[in-house]
Length: 160
Image 1 (tube, rainbow, N blue to C red):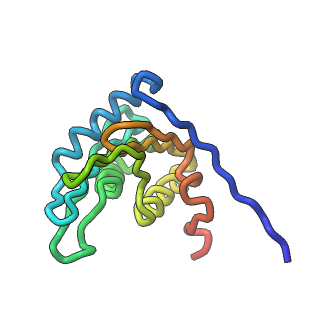
Image 2 (cartoon, rainbow, N blue to C red):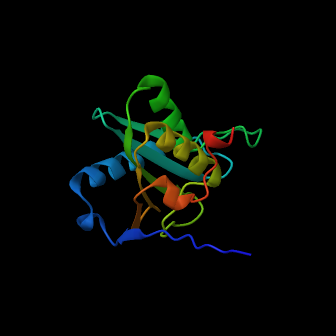
């Protein structure tokens, strides 16, 4: 038997003051996107903002449906739109924030598993890492240098 270790290093920013200005601006876009979420069932609103290498910023919010699970998360809403509108652009980074209409969200909220898989697909396709910043509605912001840090044993097209 053999074993191996997987580790990832994350940066934690205690406040916006510690973030680069471009990331503060991107995170503010996630707040605006959250307000556009359609989340009558979970009452959990998520906003995502992508910075593309062409300078475009694409936002998305979660969109629910009474027929679970046919809704779509904010991250996939944004990444699929970016792929459709700017198929040659590379995603430099994604910022994500979440809030709940039920209680305060003060811990960083990472992308769900399905979103991690969708994001890593684009990271593999573009052959460059995509930084991931995520937070709750307040509190610390976490930075991953790559989606692969969030999903280290990726399933990609090499298996097909």
